[in-house]
Length: 173
Image 1 (tube, rainbow, N blue to C red):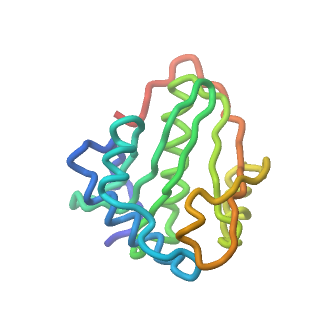
Image 2: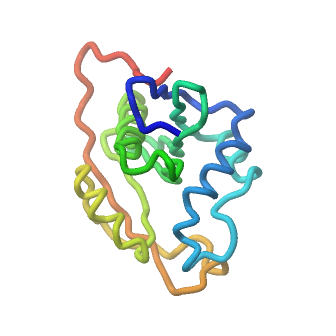
């Protein structure tokens, strides 16, 4: 699976993509097996999220799914989660590109702030998101405490989104 290149294509997910998205999220989140009992998501959960929100997908030149991110708009606030990059495509900037696509998607829909949650046990994540302009804004209980092997909570992070230039077109179709 090649790294992100000019051949990487971003698009909105369709309902038919649910199984592929779930498989990618489960694979990418295997790094959390040390504190999570079971898979990160299911096809049914992805189908439910697709019915009310969006997933943005990254595909390589061959059309293989290399990354995805769940995005939702809540008034002037955007949210993204389940940022997932195929292990063979990691460490080449695709995660950053997916975050930028999520930000663009929300900005184009009137959002001025982007929010996310990271699990405190993933200590590498807050510094990575800080490099992308996010700052810690608080904590929240972990959403599925019955699935955890260790005590944990979410760190909430937010970023102000720059206003849209006057003549910007939406990049994600």
